[in-house]
Amino acid sequence: MLIAIASDHAGFEYKERLKLFLIEAGHVVDDFGVNSDASADYPLWIRPCAEAVAAGEAERGIVLGGSGNGEAIVANRVAGIRCALCWNVKSARLARQHNDANMISLGQRMISFEEAQAIVETWLETPFDGGRHLRRIRQIDHPPPVASSPQRIALPHRGELSDEARFVCGACRQEFVFPVDITDGTRQQFVEECPICSHENVIRIEIDADGDVKVRDERDLTV
Image 1 (tube, one colour):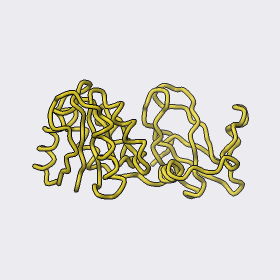
Image 2 (tube, helix red, strand yellow):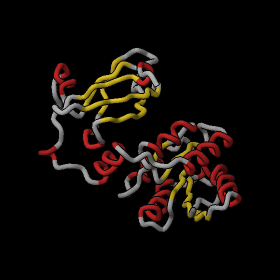
Image 3 (tube, helix red, strand yellow):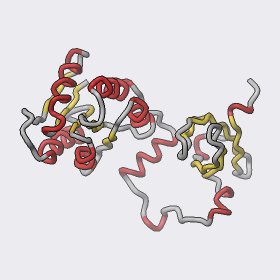
């Protein structure tokens, strides 16, 4: 895989070490700088890296800084880039599974190099889940017209929507609302992360002939 990489001075050390790791793993690395740990303005180095990924000149991109925040912001200003700020393996895995992230941003001052390396490995190896997430990715790149955007509905009526359902988290027991794509079929099973405690719930839904959504907890089903 051809991977573009760039950093500012605060991410220079990890950039150099990750570059060697990637080359040893069989990847081709295009280094956009910086070339030392002397103070540098990160937008001047990060944007060309992101533009290379957006243009298809590189398959993926990695940017680094002190926290990774500024680098992610710059990369995401480039059309076609989905740059995720990652701080652990789980965030890297979800960045690929749910967001199809073609770039990641890492903070050298926030994590150890071993953690950074594990994040990169996970991000490179994890495929995109597709499904309902693909619809959301398309909405990022091609937002619907304002007139057709979903309108906010008072909470008492949210459960009646054919494209939303309620579920009680198996860990924290708090109720949350999650989207349901009825075009994915009348019987669906997927993992939905609780927005309150981040527990991953395995959910099954059934959609009847009237378009009503019935939700079932995987734990309640007899195999």
